[in-house]
Amino acid sequence: MKAKSINGKSPGDIHSALQQSIADGFKPTLAFVFISIKNEIVAVCKILDRQGIQIFGATTGGEFIDGDISAGSIAILLLDMDPSHFTILLEDYRDKDPKGVAKEMALTAKEKFSNP
Figure (cartoon, rainbow, N blue to C red):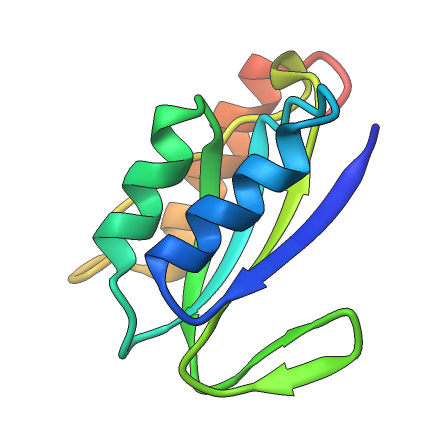
């Protein structure tokens, strides 16, 4: 598995950085995204989605990448992980017991993977 980190202050920066990171044939399948709430979240998601990259992310009050800390920016770790080795589960747990939701998600993961 190969990993590359990219960052920027805008969706345009991310688009450029992503293009540079895949220019050598790198084909990321998963992105860990940390983005300021002040930034254009939907636009960044669309950029990654167009490349077939699944997204796991969070809004943050500060972003860090490769030892640098910034605010109001976007930090992304790209991985070329085999898609059969992971799944992203999403469950709305508002008005639900978080422990119960976690248990349901764990059971779903156990069904999907023989050796989670």
